[in-house]
Length: 170
Image (cartoon, rainbow, N blue to C red; front, side, top):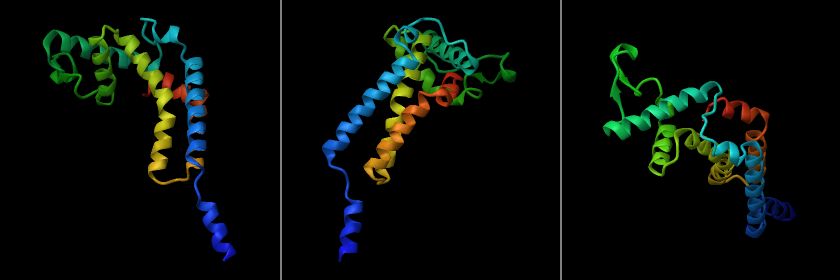
């Protein structure tokens, strides 16, 4: 029976309090690294990020906010765009969440550029914890979920994560 007892002890979870302390530590680490990588004075600067894909996201989000504020619709007819297709319907399907975030920001008086930077900050901060909860949902061991979250924090706030995120790939 000793083999069965060893097997049961190997599948036991860590105490909930210990996991909570580690998770709080990871939240603090993620927040500190995200603030280091994207400082608040950069986030709240009204100039848009002038790098690769962000310019396109900014342009589409700003057009979307202006269209909704002026006309109350989420699309407009532009005869010079793709032979008359409705503007902002085909080319930027991947940008709708960014546009909606910018629209919500505009309701509170936040400019489009700042809204995009806040979204980037939130993404870098929250994404590792989405990984943690997803793995927990698939019933991975909590310790493994914590390690994956820690890896996600370092990857997203490291050179590879910044390459993709600063490249404009939300």
